[in-house]
Image 1: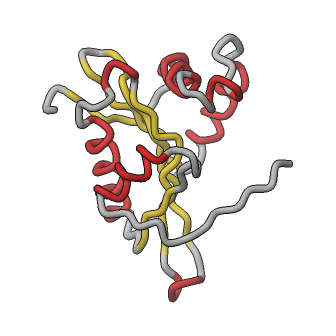
Image 2: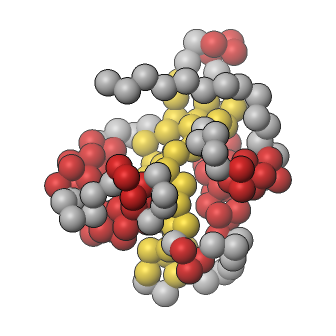
Length: 150
């Protein structure tokens, strides 16, 4: 996979990122690639926050993967810092290529560089393939997550 570059996302990557977010059974219901204004505004907020790392994986100048890494300082665990991996998406043509592993490894390595003591993520309960993928990478399903829509 040496032909893959992982770099910080830029505003011009937003259409490709949103297309990947929407190319998913869940994303198809909640994403709107036809109106990028809210995504552009969100990108600007992320870019202004040093604890947010929105990255893309690029092959031959084409965005083929993305994830967001959030670094969260805290008081629990003796004042430890943790990171949260969100919005992991791989372009349909790249799934099964090892790119997901490479992106997650980037996030784990960056979390170490940021002095995090814990990396966490959530995955929808129905995504059993994703659960196997994360477990294969060493993550454990140790908690039950809850949501409250506002």
